[in-house]
Length: 233
Image 1: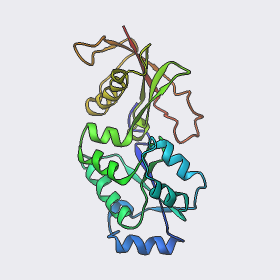
Image 2 (image 1 turned 135 degrees about the horizontal axis):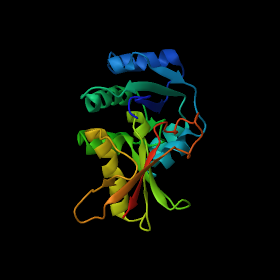
Image 3 (image 1 turned 135 degrees about the vertical axis):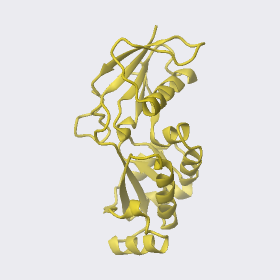
């Protein structure tokens, strides 16, 4: 189930009036970074400030949020998820974008967003936990009575959900987080009905794979690799 569309679609809004102004800002900021070789300038998105504040968990300060609301361009760069240097590549490209005037990061394939300080903090924690925090988010879904992860599609892997009575408990969120790390670092061969034991003091989790019905197939958040559903025994 791995290997399809394994890429990160990174957006950063900024004050650049047009393509030429963006190019000049990147050059001054050291834009020879190869990750920026194929960047795209997107037109302003009126809802972007709302999207980024929501996707960050209200982490953007008032001044930065006001700047995002007034952005004149979006820098879009797609980064392939290959090699052991992914954290370094993400860190390096973000440094250039920030120096060029970018106002934070939005991950277009899951909606997660970060102010620069938090992006640097997570990437500074390295693999595996730091990268997982930077690119994948766990969200309680009260209507369906479960916690869902979003963002594993960037790695070409299934997302995960935890279905239980304690979805607002920190341990439940951690279980979904830890299972995502396990999928990335161990690349296990899993089957419906397998048991996953995350810790000796926690109940084992029964695994069942399902298609991602959370979004339409043409939605950028859609995960074509499906979802592993975790249910406590």
